[in-house]
Image 1: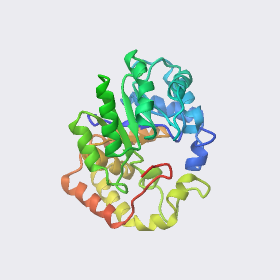
Image 2: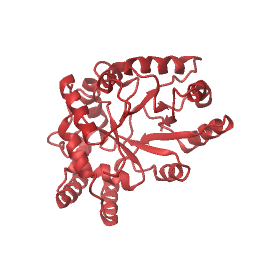
Image 3: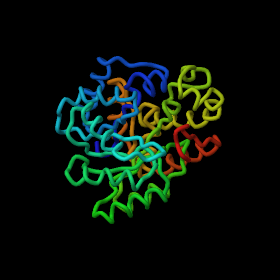
Image 4: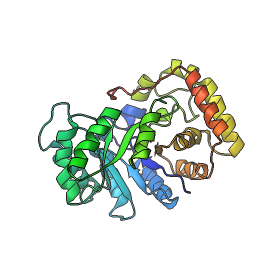
Length: 306
């Protein structure tokens, strides 16, 4: 397995902005523990979470599963308010580390591009003493990236990563991806499966749970528009003997991104592991891109600034 992915845990947490509210279903701790075990056994050691996922409940769960393991690469985030408040980033970082039962984060993010320089100024001491090993920014524009780069460089530090929404239905990130890769900045793509809309398990007849954020973001009418794309995905998946849900992940990898893949069952880890042995052809990448363009959809989360 030589293709890089990160495992996302947004669907794990309970409560506000957690699994039930966002995805319309909840997952029991036993299943998630088994999922973590199967994933790490399969070689997936990079894990992504955030303070706002279930308002801390996701970090607490993941921290319990990690249980001090030193081989796990941990990524978590601070969501800054629009109005800067001194000390908030440090406070959020310390609370995250307490929930995760860790002393340091391999990758720590500004979850939104609010007051980038002021918030980075708080992160710098944490970077210098090793508590933050790498810093990233999420939901950002090219201008935001260059602002962060410049500020960090003035302080003798480097921007480590960018995490933006990128998928077959949000394919406007290529200039940023190419820029990041040219500068040694890792580009992580979230929502590559559009919260399950591109997983192949849902369609216009069997769509998302009614009372969920993802149903609001991707209603039944949109599923009708992606039928052609889903059909193309299935044909390619059948050719390689892999699950249809893995095709958008492989597409994102070929575009130069590191996909963040949410998994909630052990079987999903097995499907991902099998798929990463496959490399899509240039013709298949182009066909998928063309079919996605035909849908006329540019998917955007309600929290995204642009």
